[in-house]
Image (cartoon, rainbow, N blue to C red; front, side, top):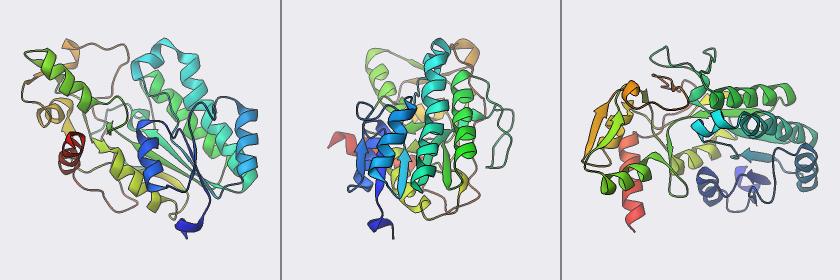
Length: 268
């Protein structure tokens, strides 16, 4: 069924969007230049003209600290934009797949399942939670996929930052008191194909295995040194434990195996 349905990918030029386009090569691929999801009329008109069966929204403003500086942009892209896409999907009778974040939670628990109550502690998390709510308000046939600690070949990510800093600095300080699940965009893109045929709702999809940012870094470089969040202050407060538990579908592979593949891939 999936191979014959008409699919649209929004945010096709981003890190996740690029890998989604490889998994859905026949999809209508829309970059930010081709569709700005903050413009309601443009979104409704574009989706209406294409008349797809499935819309995958990978467009987002993911700069966590940047969201603190530009609240308007954060809520326009991450909050209202997904609602406009959901409205357009409702009009077209299309399913919607949307990617949210572990940062909708406050980090006060060791792990979070899909039914846990969100309580974001930064503007990025607040804007992404609004996006979830707007989708649910406007559409019944949605799949909201919460993801965490994304890395991939086609954008800024933690792995590339660590590799760069490792060459520039004798020691790279990395916090050891924030925990989550690193997730490879290639694995997530392939899993998304499976998600289309699952029932509507909220899903937690990550690679398996929990680690701190320091433990993640130590698998990438050999000169990482641990520090506390207090020693490495950031503009946006981060949840200490943003571990997402997947209770609804089959698990993906361990993040270390995925990271090995990524590191091999980037050398070829």
